[in-house]
Length: 73
Length: 132
Image 1 (tube, each protein chain N blue to C red):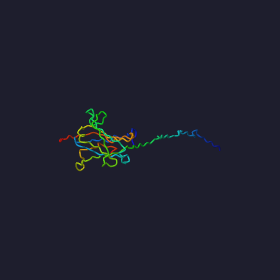
Image 2 (cartoon, chains in turn cyan, red; image 1 turned 90 degrees about the vertical axis):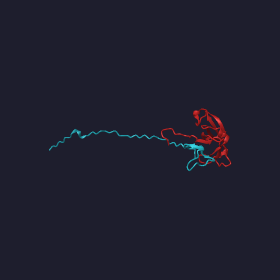
Image 3 (tube, chains in turn green, cyan; image 1 turned 60 degrees about the vertical axis):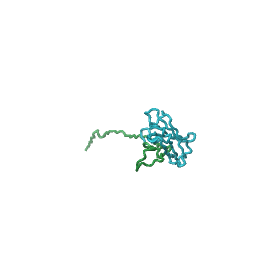
Image 4 (cartoon, chains in turn red, brown; image 1 turned 135 degrees about the vertical axis):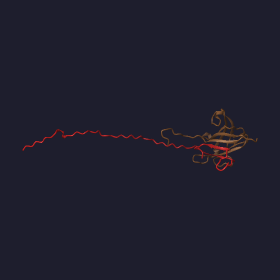
């Protein structure tokens, strides 16, 4: 007995062709610089002949340093 | 470390206020070392100090070049000063000449000015006296 087989033409499926993904990563080359400052000197100022005014209170006469300073020990 | 902006270098010398009583003697010591805290050999340096009066009353107490010389002091290493120390002295006659708002600085110079350091700068505050 004769046998006939019929195939549909859509046997072949087309799929989306996806572009290959390339990932770019940019790395910034950083030049690290550390600046170390050398102080030319350090200094301390000492009053002469002036006794303390009271516990924890400096005498109001004499040399006084205003604010903070890197040079002062 | 600072990012994205300028990084500061250098420092303002120590800012001082020297309070004296008019006509009194006054003195203080300065102890100076290098950055490693090794005392300086003071005889290697010439120490100078000038006290000036700003020419404009609005500049009193402010460090300025626009000022007139009042006194020249010569700080030196006293016999009782230890390594790295020197003494700034004001006689009674000298302190009588000073006014509040006068300005000064103290400078160390090595031979041939190879090193010049301003170890401090500031102003004078004069307390008036009663007994002459």
